[in-house]
Image (cartoon, rainbow, N blue to C red):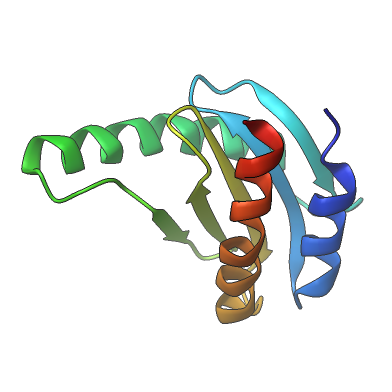
Length: 120
């Protein structure tokens, strides 16, 4: 089930968008869209953040604070916004350091319900 048009639309609609990926929490990509020349290995980045996401989900469960909805990681070179689709899948948007974080969050939140429907 290809999602590349949705991912492309998200990336190209946000200033500083470098790529987006739908991934299982075991690190296997379902679909992805990355701009050429991003300057970093976006696929590897998403795989590594899948491991981090597992730990944060586990921590939220231990603390009984409710289901994790979103995770953001900001570094010197990038901003990564991860939004949970369902128990097994998430979508990650990778932005450049100066990317429009607010619009990125909005676009992911807007698209996740449609992705949930397509995946059920």
